[in-house]
Image (cartoon, rainbow, N blue to C red; front, side, top):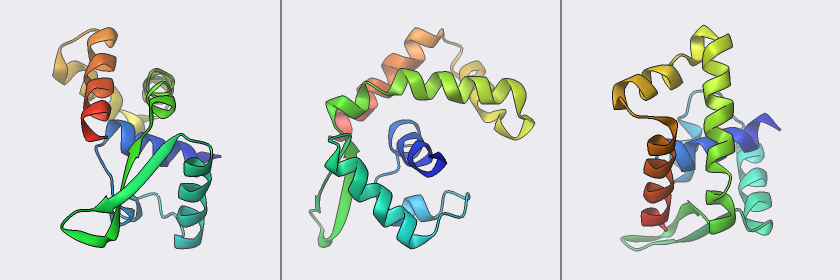
Length: 117
């Protein structure tokens, strides 16, 4: 569903790792839906959570290796959306801003996701 993809986009491409970050993404996800999707993704082994060291009651979410394997798919969907939805033009701008080929962009996001684990 769209909420699952948005959560994966936020963790994998937008460097968001906290519940509050996902709530502030702008799409208007309901708290119960967000909580449900985070639990589901964790049960499938796509994301993992761990206590945030400075504040143990706060969870820090990251992609697992299984989730990292989805980054190329997410980037393709993001890029496709930018071609057909003017509101999604940020994908094209991001690619242009980096001045890199898709392989370099994928490597950047994958490296970033691995470092955040």
